[in-house]
Length: 587
Image 1 (cartoon, rainbow, N blue to C red):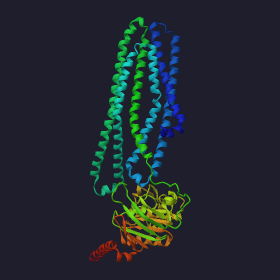
Image 2 (cartoon, rainbow, N blue to C red; image 1 turned 90 degrees about the horizontal axis):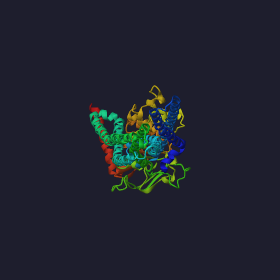
Image 3 (cartoon, rainbow, N blue to C red; image 1 turned 120 degrees about the horizontal axis):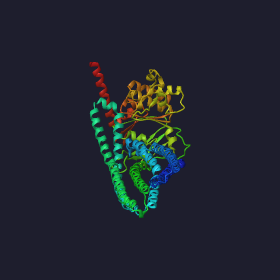
């Protein structure tokens, strides 16, 4: 409750006024049957005069207006409170996800995080709205109805004492059954969201491999799972209505059966109008129990959603500013050192991804990293900006442990182009300004020129104001790579990491980009991860990796003589290149 009160407090007035409005409506509902009973009794007794009729009519109109005012106010403030509650909660969940490290994100699927921020928060919003409209209204009707019914006829009220406990037992049984079903349903929504997101994101691959039928079948299975689990959960609510209705009308029939005898027996003092009012109060009492039932049913679903949201909010962020981190410390030179670094993605894994890495990279050097797929190249460089933290050992930048930098200052000094080239919806200029929001048009054009992106951008009708589709789908792979490099260059970083980020460009363009790095970023430490020897051949230092270990360090000529693995990669690529050239000549 302390957690949720944080989202209640800013809108406390709405959380109070909403239920109070519903109480005003309940007060009107309590007096309405009583006035109607008096009118019926007066009509049957022959004492209903025109003046009395007008007086009763005026009272009824006043009660209706009062109820309308309370109902409208309750609905307005309830909606206002629930919408703001959900907006603040969604903001905090989103902010928490933004602070997640890569390992934190690995614990939740993307589809699940989307569901938690949308569907689960919406479930809580609906629950809060229903709670504010029913939390006082239903108990108010229940207690008020019992008081009025007992005041009219205590003997007849015994019927309620029999039926209400039975209803409550049934309600508790149904709630106990429903809770796990709603929890399962939310997980099925996660799975469906993941399927849809994966398919839409990779739609080009799906079409190129003609896998539409396969993806449709996959969607159908997940959709059917959600439908079936949803039906299992909703069945409880479907059964609830008829069961409660049977209880309600059985109670009303019992009241009429025993009540009509009391009306005929003059000694009881019960009149027709009193019986009519008693029936109305009985209906109100049982209706309030039904309202509480539906509220509790929604509570079970809200609890499932709340638990899932709390899992995100309670997730311990494993990479954050250390206590001794200096927020004013910045990267000045760009020297990097790994000291006996080891790392596992999963702490219980037997095989480490990196093992006993010792490496020193001088400031301003150009370093190439090459090795087989999955040997730990990307993981190694991810340690520098603390996308992952080491299990043992330490990573130093300018002689300072990376944990002693604030995350903002550390990452501000590092430009990184990841393997997957990610762009965002918006213009090309807006995407490039991710590197520096204050970058001028000239700075954008210069960075794009260095990355060989200006060539194609200048051919677009709108130039740098060209709007990109989501993820840059209206660009080729090489074009996206060059824009991502330009975005990193705009940061003017002290350390630039290129993770296989020129694989989709031709060798001539790659050579132009390397030349721009040499001439325009002389003081920047450049780390280039590549599969092609040509991408790292001219580097000051080349690092060869295999199975999470460094197997060789040196320049191209040194490694070609001393490192068998490097030689194998080089000659295999040269043979392939020679074969391609021979094929061209033969053609």
